[in-house]
Amino acid sequence: MSAQTSNDHFKLENLFGVKGKVALVTGGGSGIGLMATQALAKNGAKVYITGRTSEKLDRVAELYNKNIEGQIIPLTADVTDKDSIRKLVKELESKEKVLNILINNAGVSSATQDTDQKTPKDLQKALFDDPSSSMEEWDKTYRTNVVHCFFTTTAFLPLLQKGTDAERAWSSTVINISSISGIVKASQHHFQYNASKAATIHLTKMLAHEIASSGLKIRINNIAPGVFPSEMTASESDDKQKSTLPKEKFEGKVPAGRPGKDEDMAATVLFTATNQYLNGQTIVVDGGYVLSTGSV
Ligand SMILES: NC(=O)c1ccc[n+]([C@@H]2O[C@H](COP(=O)([O-])OP(=O)(O)OC[C@H]3O[C@@H](n4cnc5c(N)ncnc54)[C@H](OP(=O)(O)O)[C@@H]3O)[C@@H](O)[C@H]2O)c1
Image (cartoon, rainbow, N blue to C red; front, side, top):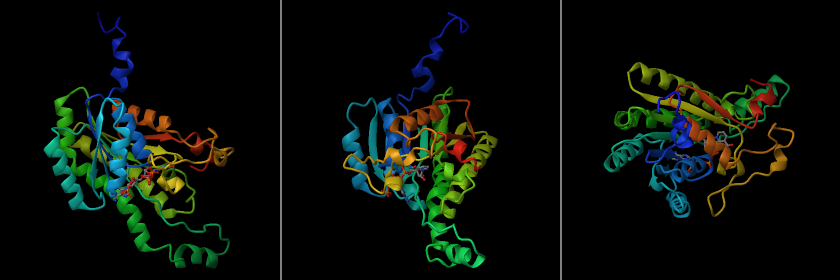
């Protein structure tokens, strides 16, 4: 049957299938990283998850390796340490011929400052003098949220390109998890976090540009989530490594009237990972938050 008269290439598994793909999710032991891990593993991908806390990763592997087509494999690593990233690459190279999907998701929140001051002195006190507003705090936030995305991406380039070479119609991909905090102009009381997420968005564009300019076929995009339940936003997770946020807190604040769900993130991750024509872009999944603030 000719391409014009066949509908087969429109089947879901042809469009969004990740069966047999090898993935690595940094910070895969909780929150958004765990949602991405489940979405990929349930649909047949072999997913390595990293984080600094082995208990979290082991619990995820134990709980979520059931009833899935793929596999979840824990590997402890600190992605703010170059030697730890080198070790991670070596470990992956010893186990796999390729890496198809890298999700740079690990991230940290930062200290908050009171930005609602009305005099120069008070604003100076809140933003400069306050001990929570330190150079170290900016460094720490950038090191995890921005620098890790740069170094894990560049360290895995050979294994990612091998993924593309092995399957020419499916280019390997990097997904950085940024945030709507890197898009809105409000500081949301944490300049360092929001500036770090804006930097992640720009880093994505630069990496996509430079990697394509070097002739490599690796797509680099970023997902900018609104509020999703996680250890970062709910301060904890339960014995299933899942977090909850009260829906009431979001009524009137987000057009969707609720925080994001596992399924919202899962669908976004599958779309971003599989769309072969998507490169250098920001995919915003926020229930309409950016739209409603009008503060871009
Ligand atoms: N949840 C939201 O509403 C939201 C919205 C927009 C963007 N985001 C972004 O989404 C990403 C995931 O955050 P989350 O909200 O899901 O929070 P989370 O539950 O705290 O997840 C972050 C994960 O990153 C890991 N991690 C932190 N530092 C690490 C390091 N140096 N090396 C390796 N792993 C590290 C943590 O594990 P260990 O502490 O065990 O290492 C943790 O499992 C972050 O980049 C965050 O900025 C979240």
